[in-house]
Length: 281
Image (cartoon, rainbow, N blue to C red; front, side, top):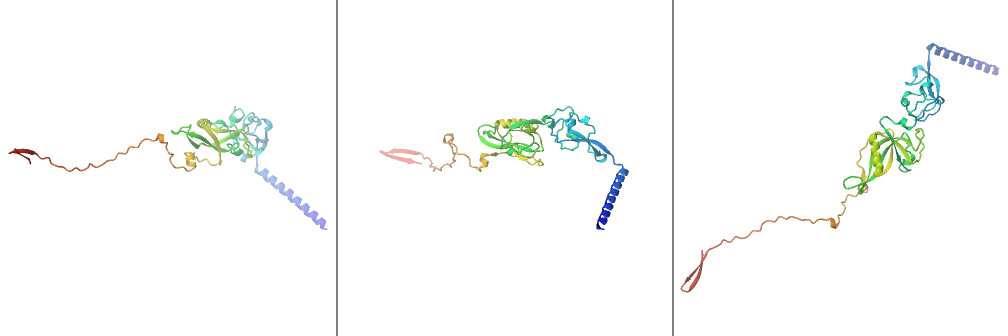
């Protein structure tokens, strides 16, 4: 008896499930939902890669929710170059592609008006390998300043010369999906032409350091740099050498001394009867 009741409940559940499925299919048919073919990535694609049919596939995508800039035919993407990494199953959009005729490689991902420049780094300069492609860094130089403020022999200074610089690649890797630190000997940065000139000068007059910064922090900060004197809080002026000292001449103004004035008198010597007499008046 118990088995018969269980079997009956199972049959009722199956019937209800089939009924719900039939109703859902009928509702979708009545709504007339249509779909379009959209080209998606069949595998993970690194930036700078040139597309071919083996990397792509097409899927049905609801027409009302298709992203802007999609492609329906694989032939439209033959030999196109992606300028950003694309994950498997992600739709291929025109905004993620380099212009027609662009060759593959790192040059395809450089922004308009920018340049790529490589600097030599080590485990310290490269922020212990955390300066990865897609991160932003500041560039600091440590150099010597002469008495006129020019680089050379003299006062040592450390100053930030570039801010919010995009790291394009580390060594020969440009993928931006890896978050594991990599200690390399070269880092490629994306710069304007003016900033590239500043960086080239900075690495020739001193030693460079990369400073990792928050990716969403874009506010520039202008500093005057820090000298060794400011670092150690030495505000005393250096003692001049004796040979370099010049004699100090002090001018002292004195009041004129008062002198008693004695008026001059006229005197006449008178001789009378062999007697001399001096009369003054």
